[in-house]
Length: 362
Ligand code: SAH
Image (cartoon, rainbow, N blue to C red; front, side, top):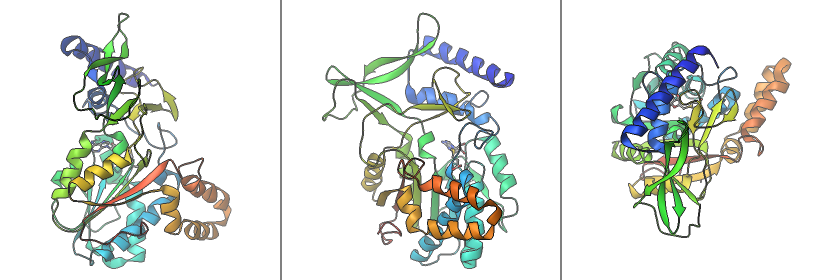
């Protein structure tokens, strides 16, 4: 690890331990929040975290086919809304800006009227990421994109929202079923002065049900405010959430830390690695419905991309670049292969109930 990263991580660890000694053991969501979002030593302050030279790779960075097919989905969604002008194209957690660039290039070609009607809004917490997005998107729209700290800050009106690997980055709480009741899983400081997991206080808000000793239930409180903000928006809304996690409710510890494309101990070097957890799609869909939103899916990423023309788009790209055909095919396959992202990743559409079931979920 570069010396600067080691220094930031040691400093963050020192402050975490200080906070635990002062306030007591901390729930996992607070730990994640400090590790990711601390304005000085947090993970999001680090440059180049996504891509071959970073810590992890995402679908738009693997193959342009991903963003192109999502661009087509946007065109179909806009038509289903009655082609409102302007339409806000909102991306949550746009990373390096690659997905948005691929979407915009595709709609400029496939549906120029949508490209003209599009206002780009980016919701991004990380300053280095915002800088990467500004550079990547400099020449893609007539109007420069606007950046926001929260979806609630994006002006009202018809909107298409895209979120790829955004929900997994929102902090989770973990409840452990112990002796017939749910207890908060916490991060504490052990006798040796190191961070360690422990069982904390009883959590009154755990559901009853069929849990067994040791089962872990993961809750993501920030989903509620995100869905509140979606439900409050005026005008037709179609949003797409793409992420890894089970379609049906499942117990288990899915907290993971990644650095240099390898799993590492989530407690070992706070702030120096990406921290995420699986998305519980069933719970997320249920929360959306309870707010009056309609939900399509989830379906697997392989089903979603397949139905939008993954095979045709890949063949065309290979034919246009014969020298790179092998690499193009291998990358595009990774998006849909069961051993790659095809089945672990799910796609869920959250929309206004006034819109029809969105393609290709029908
Ligand atoms: N969608 C991109 C990046 C995924 S990584 C891609 O597919 O490549 C997660 C992204 O969400 C990063 O840009 C991260 O900085 C951002 N992010 C995470 N939590 C956030 C939050 N609470 N608010 C805004 N942005 C957030």
